[in-house]
Length: 274
Image (cartoon, rainbow, N blue to C red; front, side, top):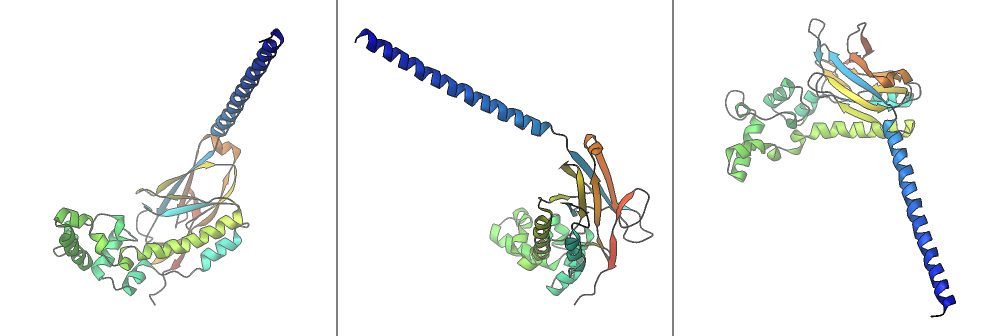
């Protein structure tokens, strides 16, 4: 190889090496920039609302936490969500007792659901005394017998007996409510242009909305909550200010007025069964 050819080859190799190094350095810089952006997004302060729901079934009853109830946080003010609030207020509603009675549930099953304020049979375990004895629920006893025949083991049969309940008694009421909620959520997201946050209260009636930006929101339960003989609906504004981002913001709701209560439910008598 001539001296000129060797020099040209060496120069070409150096140019290729420079290009490779430049590409690597550019890629690393891009990754570092994106990493910094992600860190900035993660470090950005956000608000937390500690929701507490405490209710009275009657005027003489003590306040208690409203357990296992779902609440929603929608972007925008009440005025901006007026159409949604009106849809919530005018929706027809079948109560739990009316639904199960209409679908042929026994009084024992309806009472079992009411004992723990359950909407479906999945909300708590079915114990042995609900299968046999004076407190037995006929639907559970029949489902247990079918499950025992299917699984050949009493323990497994009791655990899985819900699979042998008719669908309308197993989770039909929940599915009906979910259909109503899904339609309202679709309307809420369309009107606000933002995702809707959802939380469920714990056994003490407490839940947390997190990662909130400053602004105006509406707290709602979308479908009325049954409180004995009444139906309670919450639709209230909540303000998240810049100062609220540094700490947890308490927000107490109830069906009774009190100086600490931020949102009082609108209560209506439960409609009679049709």
